[in-house]
Image (cartoon, rainbow, N blue to C red; front, side, top):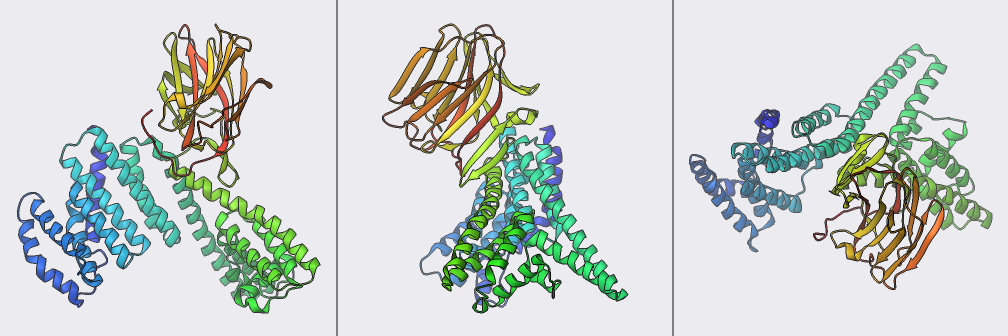
Amino acid sequence: MGKWKTVFVFCAALLGGGLRLIAAAETQPAADPFVKLVDETYDKRLAEARRTPGDLDDLAIVAEMQAAAADDRTTKRLKLALAQKILSVAAPLGTPDAVAAAQKALEMIDGIEPLAPIRRAEVARDLAMGALTYARSQNKTPAEMTALTRDAARAQHACAEVLLAESPDEIDAATSALEGAWRLIASARLEDMKPAHAALQKEVNRNRVRVMQFQGARSRLEAAEKSGKDSAIRTARGALAQLYLEYHGDLVHAATYLEGAEDARGKAILGGVAFLRDPTRLDVKGAPDTIEGLIRLAESLKTPQAQQNVADCAQQMCQAVQAAKPEPVVVARVRLLELQLRKVMGIVEGDKLGKQLLVAYKGLTCKLEVLDGARVRATYDFSAADQIRDWSAETGAWAVGKGVLACKTAAYSYGRAINKLQFRGDRPLKITFSGSAKYLLGAYLVPVGRSYSSSYAWHFCYDRGTVYVYGGESYWSGSAGRIALGEVYKFCIDCDGKGGVEWSINGTVIRKATAEKNPLRRGPVQWILQTESSDRSLTAFDDVVIEGEVVTRPGTGEER
């Protein structure tokens, strides 16, 4: 339990103030008659319960309040007062039953009078930290402590995310939440959470730079205005406008510093803002120029949200122009501009999907590219040792080193490594990889949680000189040469999502096959690399590239 020492010291320090926040969670004014009624009904008994050892008496009263809140005759105001009291009583206890009761109370409050996002995230964080501190006193197993520490770290991350979204200028609060998460991650060695943490830290750092840049720009504008020099004022105003555009895509604020601008970029911004302020005064003939200028502006911006905001304005103008039914040539130009706009908005959506997948899969170490919609390309060149985190060894000893994914097994034993990404089996799916082995190279495409008999498999062997392709109702084998020790083979396996597969080695098509029914048509699928050794020799895989429609909410399925 030595590694937990730092965890618990930190928990104690945080909870000293954190649970006081929960105790006061979004209470109604004291004058509220329903709050007064709940206090008068339960406070005396709760005070007596606190003087008894354990939490059974407290939880018994909590159960009474839960039953009262669940009664169909209970009004919303009384239900809200009861839920707030349950939260204030149960949250500090930290026991599993108490935390569950507090979480239900939190949901009840949200259903009646939703908490502010930051407030809710703080309460959820404090609940997770309370559960972790209580578990320490109960001598839980290392596995249980790891799970609770992970929950607490995730709650800290969620708190930081909400702070960044709701109060981006409050850098200190987000930094504090991240520091709390890092202590937990480092102390419990939660390696899989480090990528997500690094991404959040990068966002906090970016926000810190943004705040400093805005402060500096405003100071320079103030100095320029004091100097009375028109050129200095124009430069300072333009710099501040650029910050509003770069970080937020905020056309309205940027326009206040660009009044009278004569350049194409400035005119587009002013034209877009004029439309946003009063869409009924749209200049139909001049709108296409404004739309094109906004598209160029969106393309030049680096942050997805800024791009999205500018692109949204351009999209609204496109729709307004077409609704006005101008002459055909104007409509044609706007439709061509819409095609350009879709490309910009596609980039923005791709960035959102990438961030969503990073959270859903608890970190990814591949190079991830969003192609279109939910289709992605995941690339592993194994240049970094941490790429092993996206693979789980089912059998055999797997490791990343010297730029390859290597496997060592006992003689005539399989080695299988499962990639964590899940894809739709009823959509086109492709994998390419290089491999070198003495005995066998192969790959499986298996429905998540199901048996290998429901899969497709591709084997290239040494002693039999045979290629196998099977899956569902399709099976084929045939001579395709033999693996030669020291040679590198480039595999390409292409599935059409309808039961058809094409397999090539070193650019030569080995086999095309189609199953009458696609065995992968139900549920998500995963790629599995496979090897087999005759004498404990190493097998190496490299340059793995997977393309397909990724599952954004991965599940475990049944046991394989």
